[in-house]
Image (tube, rainbow, N blue to C red; front, side):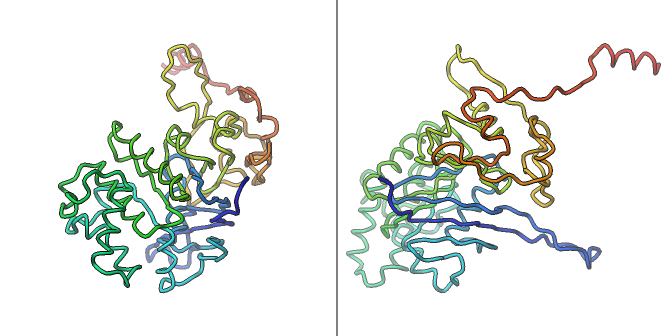
Length: 358
């Protein structure tokens, strides 16, 4: 049975103002709409995967939830409290229950701090009543929980003395040391060697089961998202275009963008019948978003209504929501309906035109 969500995101928006020069005095203010009206829930002990190409707003969503960025609009309900509007002075108590694992373990650790100082720093902020002995015990336990062998031998090491995998495990230990209920993991394995990615991912899954930690797992890799996530959200230009349980979404991709993402995943099977899902053009600017459906400039199945009206979330199956006007027509089909024919000049006609010009 599903539990009450530990985190509820409602209509979250994050706009970044663009600074303009003196020559643009009096012109309307421009914004980069990094996150625009995002809504989802995360339950205790579950992993919500957020997937999409670079620039879609995944990381900004995670940073807003962790309150490293101030949301422009919307609410972030964490344990019956809306933390979207609380001031920075009030964030200290909240951050004990919500931690973040960053993408680059080479940048997220202070090079002047030893492992003991790095992992023990959150305790200095949140557990001031602890004695030095209690703090050291907590640090060693966190390093053990993060899968580091012989943690006593690592306490006085600096980040440059650690491998990439060890650094990321130290970052995970730093997040675990204060016993959080929720962790934002921003592409935590993308900077690691392929040979050690599986170990870190399995560690995070074990921690989820052991401590019932909820995660927001941000990644651009659909295969990793499938392995890690209980629920999956596909993001495009600041919007969630499709959400469902992971297996449901992978087995029944409905939105054209989701189909294109899955089609781009290489399958290690020479007999696999690969199906191309065409996308045209480039990603529109997040400053001047297209009207209607944001994907319509790249969608070969787009029609007039897609250009005029923003589609609503359509529930094509229980818990499976798709932001597309034709979601019900596409759902359950192994292949989407054929795209409209695009008339391109053939080579012979081009040659004839060149001859005529000569």
